[in-house]
Image (cartoon, rainbow, N blue to C red; front, side):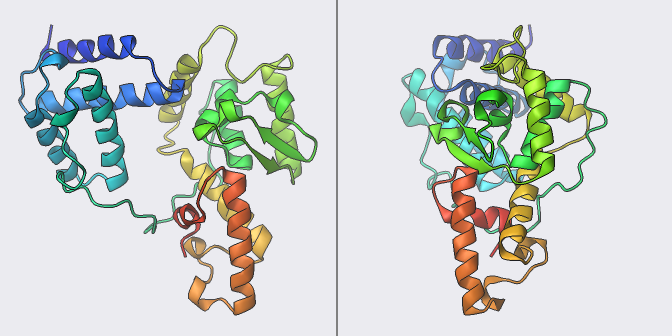
Length: 290
């Protein structure tokens, strides 16, 4: 067996014994750690068993990620997974702090518009994945929410209720049902789910297996980052509520607004913060700019 195979296998064994967090968290953690193993081996290290992990392995790989110009937020997410791994190995001290690793602060000021407007879903062949993507597009749902949603239960006539168990951080919320398109795709989701109380995860699949189908479909369709559907939703919703486009989409910046418009901007951003399930208004800058 190859070094990479052995190292990744040892990581899988450790993770199988430590099934903590939501299914989505576990899947994301696994992807990061298997990628860590792949990158470590590509750097020339011959580590075959994760039990032999040392600080030099961590530092070298983090440096490799930084040299490849990964975003600070991405590197922080990956080092968080490494800290979890090292905690289970009783080696938590071998992962330096973010300051020691020279990982900068997260920046919420966007430089490009990540919104995906008018996406082409024609190459999506899995019906449930297609509906999940449409729900992301018309309701601004996160990927996990759009897969786990139980549409019959979520439909409250004028609002979509997202239950805490479907949402990031267990933060349930309500999203307005304001357009015919939203109503259409919600009804399609009900048909796909079947019985009341069922989600868009087929009966013969777990969340992880349906997530795998989703990711494979999205990759084949050339959709690099479906989270951009959520960005597009937020920008459209902002324009509908304020009457002008978001700064990231060519609208006026905060400095260019009148005092009355600034008050409207603040109120709308607070509304969107709640609708998106975020805890801080500042994160809206990532979707709308300032």
